Length: 112
Length: 113
Image (cartoon, rainbow over all chains, first blue to last red; front, side, top):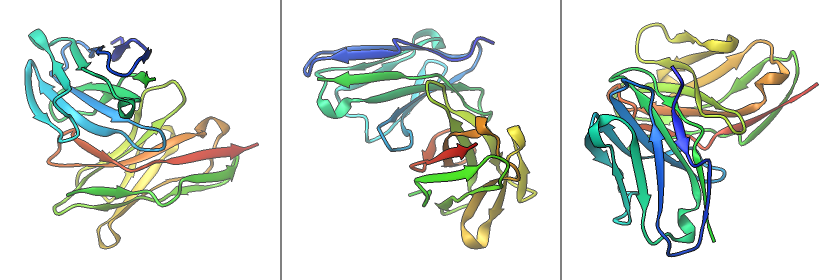
């Protein structure tokens, strides 16, 4: 059990650029979650997958955000045409159905 | 909609003193309640959870929490704080046993030696 891995740890980009983050969950965990955390706030739910199916998306997730989990393993979160308001820590977590969440250390995005 | 309130943004305690972090929730049905801890550069770690049954739940690192339905509260306690407990603590509520959680804004704990 190597834990949940997220890459990169930090990303600095200019407004209007596209960025993609990767999450490798704990192997065999069938659920994978994305959360976003801004300074001084708790994490906010964005979306989750069960295996390769995206089961729910938050209203926070605008059309510029897309997430995938091909083959039910790793997941990517892409943000198109980034805005300064997208600056946040993006957290990935995984679990078995009904079991506790294991969080990664997150990807810190800064949009200049 | 479910929500969580953590009224204390910062708390400072002396090492060896007792600790209580407050959490109030709003949820229409029986809630699934959680406490997580986040240290700088680390992922969120689950301290304990309440689904049903005994309203006093024990967690890791000597923490416990008590569910009080009448007060809509789920306060976290520790009888004797260690310097390594300094971190940010988040209370969260989940729906239907899943892990789609609503978190509070967190309480930053500082421990004075």
